[in-house]
Image 1: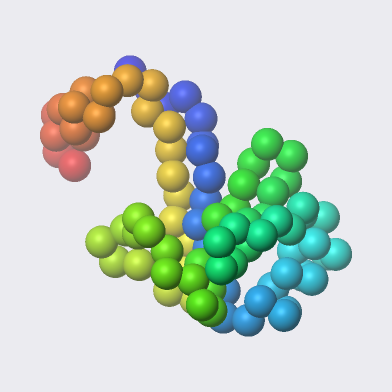
Image 2: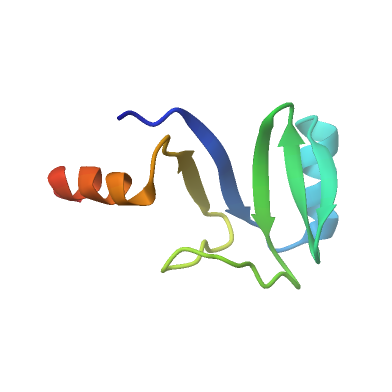
Length: 91
């Protein structure tokens, strides 16, 4: 069963005052509040943003560092099928 779409990406920023205007004014993102932080939306695509003051949950085993990213895909079936598929592929 193939991945059906990219759900969202996660980026980590170190300065909301610089990041929010950049993503909004330069890249045209809709900047929306999310808890103690922000998300950046480009139409139906979304960047989840980890940054100052955000206790992100859940996070990857090794959290995204500033300047890094984390891609999140949608699997169209039960998690057990995804685990079996990954195992069969040696992942």
